[in-house]
Length: 99
Image (tube, rainbow, N blue to C red; front, side):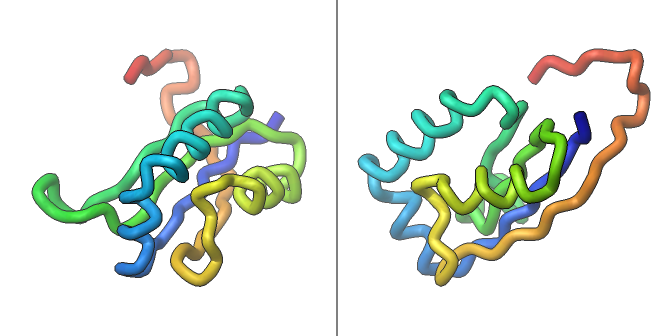
């Protein structure tokens, strides 16, 4: 398996999507159904600012699987959110991090 990092960049309009409890609940349920999504969460430039994007770490054999995972997420609105996918190699591979 290859590890991938997805970096999402949001427009200001994505804040309205984030504010929808229905969409948020659907997004969380979707993430829970996909164990290949190892960890994810919103990004802010500073703790007291609004979210401006997100980050996911995914294990998948092919980049296309990660693209499909993103495309089917109820929180993915192409007009409000762009993304880049990178392969990722973990430094200190022998150590486990619990967040």
